[in-house]
Length: 448
Image (cartoon, rainbow, N blue to C red; front, top):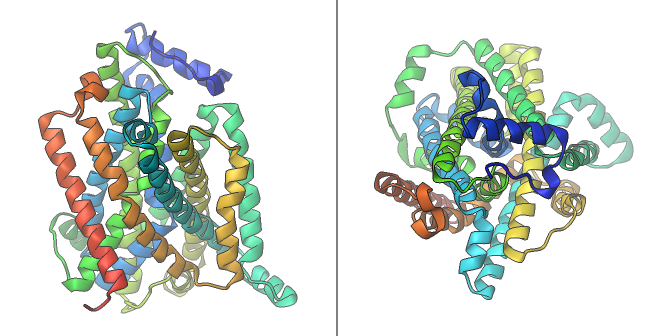
């Protein structure tokens, strides 16, 4: 049997997708090459949302404003690492039929499994905090005068009403969970498309220096210790632990086959999904930095370090349309990534504890820290940066087990890592862990 829908995947759209995938894997499809790829696209696009979340806005804008195009190569290098990591995560789900959390739970003693669950829950909540705040900030930036007036009249924080609106939007999206995986994949992909189009427009308005852009895309340069710190921040905001767990969960039961030949074919299509989705995410990240370099750095505004500053300065530099497009992109990014963060938390809890809570309960729980931050009047951008520190701490706990398990033939069967893949996987894991340790060190011991 090639395709086996889960109990939650019996909806018409899902069944059509699974039937098409079944025909393709069995060689019965008469569709052209492009149409044969479509049934397999989706999981990587959901995972790619984490790579263009509000945390990326903070690090990319600061990097571009302070150093121009110099750190552009870091984005492309990080994106290649992300492609490898997400490919391994997807492959684990397909080959083993289990997500990373379940695989770890099966091989750890009870105390270690519970400890890992706690660590990853903290990571997931930190991620969701940043993404929810980013989306609320996007809503606020669309109508700043209105929300400022409401804040003046009521005496409440100006981000409170945008946060409430954001919470309502997220609950609407999570209702799609009951409609099968295909509608949710389509919506998340559409939101990714909105972010990509917004930054395509921004890049057109920026009129970047093409020569400098190409040069710094391929030539690695670290502009001093601060540049290394920002490079580590870019990487920390790119490769995220929660989405590693999520991607393995998205592929574990979507299309199931035990036949070695069909499994290799399925992996080939998933690889296409990863390459397309991560290439779009990488291009969006590059566009963020290019925007900051072409506008702020070029005009000597190297001290732009917050999303609000970036929004305010875009109007006098590029016109009102640029700031409007920026706000729309931030809303789409925060909204989609907040939804994906909630999904990741569900995979983590179910995998480690074999328990599942209703998605709306988890959504309420993960929104609470955001409302606390807003109520205390904390700086949203600073909160985004601190959330990246928490992610940096949790990353080794995801990427090292992932590399170990995907190199284990007993778990992976025909999809076990080849020697060259294993070497690159450990190299990437080492680089990511070292840079994140450096980021943590510089955060807690600045200037040392």
